[in-house]
Image 1 (cartoon, one colour):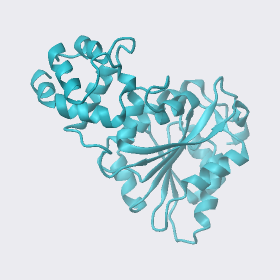
Image 2 (image 1 turned 180 degrees about the vertical axis):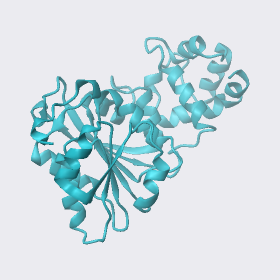
Image 3 (image 1 turned 30 degrees about the vertical axis):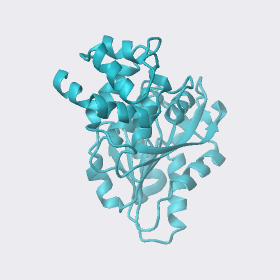
Length: 280
């Protein structure tokens, strides 16, 4: 199958990255340490795959096929013609795969890398962060708006529940921005490459990740309201309980969710946890 004639599918959010400099930079960021390997999400026609194979080869290790996950079944034939046995393809949705099983053969510090479909970027990211076996590094291309949210600091417009939930579990840095012209077809938005390094334990202690996540979601559900009012409206917590918890932490009861640091969100979860457990 001629890869030049493969038309990107809008239904899968496909935009094929063709800028060689961008591809090279992503590959260089993705190389794991000796003794570990990587997995590519959404190889498409193999433009990034080619660079990943090249950087793997620089280590001189005896490595098996480069593992890839691709939802578009057309790409298996394209990748086989282009790379032969050097690449293995699992036809699957990266948001639903068994990540611990996939990562098990990849050594102690594997990397997951990919140009993620914009509509699926966060589901894929959280599927990785919520598994029992996580990669040591993620190098992902996402919509710049999503990248800004992942790396945002408190009291900035982009800071929200995604920022808090991801930064509790990862070191995050925006590596570089990518213009529309680097893709075929050119998307309507800018993109960015983000590097995330999951932590062995959450950055700050929380009683339960599920309850913490639910609390943060509720706290940002009504951004125009104070945190106290938002939580009162979206949970079974009483206004008195919330005000008391904020007071213990030295926080003004008029504070909004976006003003709390990740550390303060974790402290609030610890303070409210008995009530969260009782009230659901």
